[in-house]
Image 1 (tube, rainbow, N blue to C red):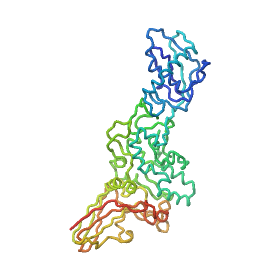
Image 2 (tube, one colour):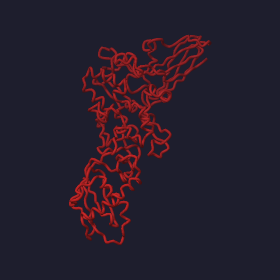
Image 3 (cartoon, rainbow, N blue to C red):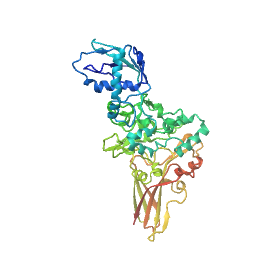
Image 4 (cartoon, rainbow, N blue to C red):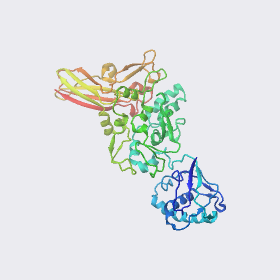
Length: 497
């Protein structure tokens, strides 16, 4: 319990401790028969009058104390923000001040008549207010955040964080159903540890359906992964006060409708919070499935996750920021090839370079992974297929590296992982007993692919094609006709003799 000293506003030396009133549903004042309960607005009016208008009283008047016996008890259901702190959006501090001033002066007169005054020395009345204060907005509703942070909220809406719920991501939704049919409904809360971390016990709740929203990252009190085995919401402790923290220190005096504080270290380092969900994950048989964090660590990476996936972009993050740049909240990644068109293609194309050469009957391309994890990474079904096509002088196609199935016709040109069961048959990653193949590019790896082509080839085009999952997995999940199962061009380069 906090203890707050409340003094007569007419005294020349006024003070309040603990930054004033910060959470009340009602104020009960003893020994005031006519006003046994005061609303939170009334309590606010007292505070405003004391802080703003007490100095207007005569400095020559003898110090007088108004007794309010018993103390003032403040309930927990409503919050005052800094300054006036009514928690009502859209009202300026000045406007709120002026609207409260008459009520405050009337209230002070009433208090004097009801309680009686004497000339005794200043003695503070103690107010006891339970912690913590509550946010005055719904921090699990990104639309509530948009009034102050519109730019980053709009960026977030394009991200997979905004589409993390199983009803929003067809691939995750299909995999979840596939596994629940085999493993039971209890699987759902396990998936929601990362896909709906604000309420993983109820994946259908409004907070969970938001996916990975503003509060999922900014509403944290601490991050503790133990020995590294805790993942998702199991590693997260959320603030009970609704305080929102980011990469910058925000003073307590900031006019926010939610709590604020110092920069959160798990955000500022650009990786700790990301790895809560994007680190290494193994299936029940101990076979590694999602391994982005482990790949990043093994690379001895000198850049953080946010260096690439949350780059600094031009413009303020919203109405409350005066900074010239901010970190993008689009969280760019492979899915943006499907969602964001040219912007997504440009981002993904920057992840890998391809340098071709054509000499005699030898066609080659040197690939370089420019990321600090494997290429591709993340969901274990992802794959990149390298396809080469040769043209003669007339522009007619006379050769290509494969026609139907690259895994049988040109397996070296497929950058992927293959999971198999105990019998050696390909299977879904959750049920694999081993990884039969991992042909992905390692961080910063260079690799050359070569083909022998007809002498009539005078120009060749080399294409990199991205898939979120292989065709066989798409069929098993019932996604063959879904856009997420269709290939997308990642990069194309051309070489001539």
